[in-house]
Amino acid sequence: MKKYCAKIDKLLLEEKLSYMVLWVFVFALPVIGTYYRTMDQADVSFEWEQVLRSWKDYVPFLLLFVVHDWFIAPLLVHENKKLTYLSIAGGALLLFAFYTWNQSPDRQGPPPREQMEMRLGEPGKMGIPPGRPDGNMGNPPPKPNGVPPIMIQEKLTSIFVAMLMIGVNLGIMLYFKQRRREEDQKELTRQKLQQELDYLKYQINPHFFMNTLNNIHALVDIDPEKAKSTIIELSKLMRYVLYESSRPTILLNKEIDFLQQYINLMRLRYTNRVNIQVDMPAEVPGIEVPPLLFIPFIENAFKHGVSYEHESFIRVKMQLQDSYLCFACENSKKPQEKATNTSNPHSGIGLENVQKRLKLIYGNDYFYLTSDNEKKYEVSLKIPVNHDTLPGNR
Image 1 (cartoon, rainbow, N blue to C red):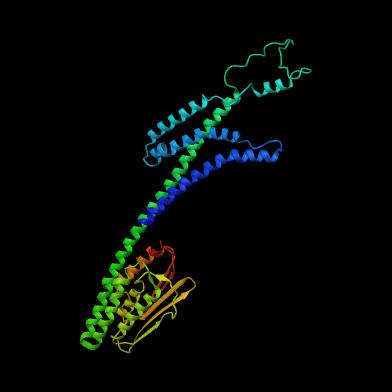
Image 2: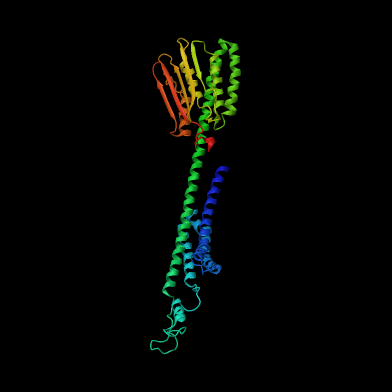
């Protein structure tokens, strides 16, 4: 849960940082523009007054953004109140438009054309303002009333930029909302996956102990001393199942030791007529696998592959190939019996659970194949090691 909260906080931090970067860039533009003008023109000096004047023009946009981001946009993004959002956002834009339209132009003196005429004057009359068309000196022509067209264009542009800014703010918020929804879905999927894995694992444990206790029961009458040794070996296996297998993943060398102990336990019960061959890696790197993943195959081999009337064999092999772990188990079959013993509805629980676990943990990134004929049953399994989708690696 803490890891999930950290993801959500990280998304919120990313969102606010994106806004900060955008506004820093906006406020840096006047500084950059003024600096490059001083580089291009030697007679122009860097004037902070121009920069401050530009920043002053940006302040209303920044205030509108803060109000929209913190108070107005959440009405739509988080509370889904479309009508309320449109009403308040529209009112905020109208207030901004009213403020912008009634803002006096930050200019002093006559318009630029009249300034130029005053500096140049008429031919032969330097510095004399232009007169009437008849050549007589007098008052200049009256200035036109209203806002100049260029100022109207600037004000309309400011309103359009404000609308665009609100749209960008809303788009970024909706984007991060979608990412939060995806994180929520991933967390729910992860919890459901973990619950299903735990359920399957809890089914494997009783299934394993039931088979082992049946073996010990058979040894009590045949060889009491072997039965005692079997109980000691069983206690070691129980320690692993109870304490080690509760983890999402386990070191491969511990899982191999567990399989070896189980096979040694089975050797105590069967005679030399059962040929048991085990080939495990001598050196195992520090990789992890799901616990109790391979034991159902070996249980199935001993349960359905050993005959007291005919010679039987069980072969177990495990090896590492590149980034995959390959496991194979094959066993002889009792006459007229399938390896999974489909006549008994309870005999296939272990193998069925293994297939469900493989699908839940690895998706489609694994290889599982069984071969069943009249004399032999074989299973091959290939899984990636240190896989990103393992519950313990999320």
